[in-house]
Image (tube, rainbow, N blue to C red; front, side):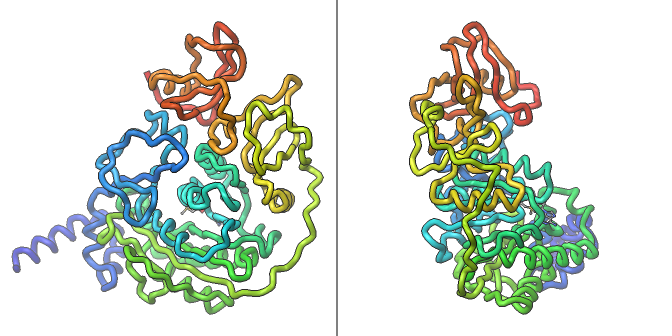
Length: 457
Ligand code: SAM
């Protein structure tokens, strides 16, 4: 026994020297975490993905399903996603298993049948694509990211995921004061000290300090306060981090419930570990084979929703004559909106909130962009290619080999049989994007900023 304890102490000491010393001391003194967490952080993290239920399944080295996430799977090895055309088609999203607890939580909340959900700190889009799948193209998802460069990546990932009912905004949380009583659920996946990243990202270990934990905790409180007004009475706020300390987790939840009228919601989540105060749950790497995740659910008391006048938004116009879009889309329950020379589709039911949000916030994705209105008709947008809900099934299509698909995604042109005009490029029957065929050659319309940069030959 002594030998075993000695070996364990030696192992912990050897592995923990890579972790910040103050972090190691804190964890060792915390009976909720202790050495088992330090040992787990010294091992390789598992690889996990979440499938897109609306697209062709990719051929991935699946090990086993993630029991708490409907579309989640652990993989036996980490593939090179960049070289899989179906990754670019939005067939799946690499997402660590702990974060996928959100799926189990959303399924437990008594939300309206078509909820309006805000994902406030959303880039690069892991939680947003999960929420989009949960909504199954019903309701409305507003995904926000404050940092502009990251908001672009969020837009790309949501466009590839393919739902019609998604709006992307690029705003500071404080801006949401302009849209009070709007959301049935808000997800705040807050910027945090990232202790859950230590397992995979050694740089995160160097950035950690107790001072940074305190700064993050204060920023999280500001973010929660900023967005609370925009939650509908009776609505739910899901607060999450990927860190293990009480300051950013249990203490922030308790502080917020004290400072506001928020009620802490207690759910039964069979896989997660109740937190130190039983006000939330952890997915700990030593217990669930995850990187590390925390979440808690708060509810605003029922009350009256402030009525607002229907939004007038002179920048947007409803399109009455839709004939020019008809070859491209199957229109059902969609409002077509013109913004400058571009046309967007949003679910008819959410036309008013879409106008309102566009008026009040910096919207960078308004539903699904169908294309640009040109003299000779519509120039189709990649969002239309990637959206299985509204894209017409009669579009001219060219099925590509894997080599050709990678070359297309790289932005190349190559010899290809095909009729004149816009053609949808598919791989394993899953659309990737558009070309304009000119007879003997084609123009590659795949967006420049999405192109694969590595050598694909
Ligand atoms: N939810 C994302 C996902 O699942 O892919 C991950 C979000 S990450 C934990 C936190 C996000 O908050 C980052 O994208 C970061 O840019 C953003 N952020 C940073 N500072 C912020 C602030 N002051 N207010 C709101 N968001 C902030």
